[in-house]
Amino acid sequence: MKFIRVNMKDKSIREETAAEAYQGMGGRGLTSAVINSEVPPKCDPLGPENKLVIAPGLLSGTPLVNTSRVSIGAKSPLTQGIKESNAGGTVGEALGRLGIAAIIIEDQAPSGELYTLKVDENCGVSLLDASKYKGSRTYAMVDDVFAEHGSQNAILCIGPAGEYRFKSASIQSSDLDQRPCRAAGRGGLGAVMGSKGVKAVMIARTKKQAAINDSEAFKTASREFAKAVAANPFSGELLPSQGTAALLAPLNNMGAFPSYNATRGVFDDWEKISGESLSRVMDERGGNHKHKGCSGCVIDCSNVYVDEKGGYITSSLEYETLWSLGGMIGVGDSDVIARLDRLCDEIGLDTMNTGVAIAVAMESGYKQFGDGEAAIEMVEEIGRGTDFGKILGNGPDAVGKHFNNPRVATVKGQSIAAYDPRGQQGTGVTYATSPMGADHTAGNVVGDYLAGKLDPLKSDGQMEASRNMQVIMAAVDCLGLCLFASMCMEDPEAAGRVLSALNAKQGTELGQDAIPGLGIKTLQTEREFNRRAGFEAQHDRLPKFFLEEPLPPHNVVFSVSEEDLDNTLVFE
Image (spheres, rainbow, N blue to C red):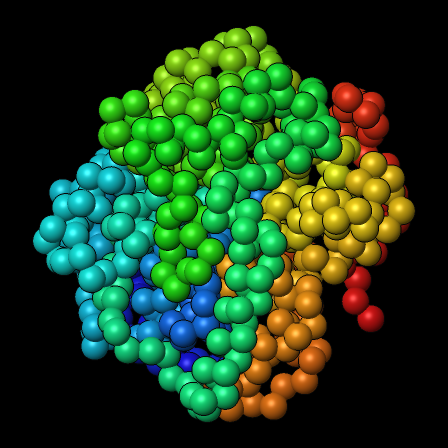
């Protein structure tokens, strides 16, 4: 395993073999292990002691489909705990093909200095002066970088929000069209990257493949897994036709679509922004509702949203953004939401944290729900770094404090996603107990509800469902596998194909418990860091209003016991 360590203070760069303790790790498991071992848990997340770790999954860079994810880890300035933020696009594949297990960015550049970290096709690493990009928005900068260095590169970059070190700052990742429209959005890791003095990381994309110990066994496993992904109704049929927006109608019908700052579980104008509506609009205008955004993808769940004249606005307009910058703030106009999404990508912002911050401001009387132009101006204020933009850019908790409004839908400082925990109790357990803060990708139980396996409104079975999903998703993040492709792994045969691929790559003989074991080990590592950082049981709780305010239309509150919350991630 090859590490590249970059010290931003003295500009030293060294390649090393990973320590024995890190062997066999990848993706989220590796980023969390490095942070737990090497970062003081009570350090300032924006200070020199924090580290930014960029790691492809164990299977990234191989021919196994949908394994181009990259994990980025640090101590979060938003949650004050450990954080892994995950992105698609082209970066994970590029690192995996070069045989780089992790890039670890340490210390800080002197104040005012800004750099691009370049990794060439021979793994040569250099720091390039990026001072001309100070304050640049991501699209313009990436266009310039590709023009200068060629399109056969993958890029991670920050926008103005990261340079301002705002707690909602994202790290944007380039897609297959060289657009910085994929995001490691959660946890404010763009602020950590900005604090290091790094504007962009550029990795050469090569045609080589990651080293594989048994290529024939790997080919067989890869071929069968691809068939399983294609045969799954969700990944093989629904996502290619509507993308993640396909979730909007069923979630709204469940009464679990948090709207108007989570005061209701349904949105009046949901049909205007549904997956069916978006696909129709894109077809009429010449956009694309079946778009390949990530390397090695066979699902094509991305989209390209265009204006009435066919001009590009954004890619991809995802379910979470349709919620956070749509239903959560009362906006039912997909054109407005697309413009907001593009602005967030340009400025480098987590659309979820930003939408919930706007929702808190609107409920506090700053602007009216449904005022899309006001929302656009609010996001522009973040980009300009105005006084109010600073409050918004630092997330929902900062906005709630400013307006003295306690109705803030966050856990550990991070906003919930597009699933109200009163209407989906098991996902609420994940929000409360994940070491990451409120995070749907950490263990979303929506599949169990849609399949009729679990009643989303009752507390029974929710803790166990959340625990199982958190273990699975932590393992998936270790592998570099897209969570949508991983859904077919509910079938033991498909899960076995992934294990066979991992063994074939590594030359190991791991048993059926190995992949869940990756997830458990990762969660234990993350919880250890958070405990040392000062987190206690009281931090694994939802905001009080979820326990006290019934959510229309079902008029239920979150009812899972504190005992269940405390035992969710306890493994014997």
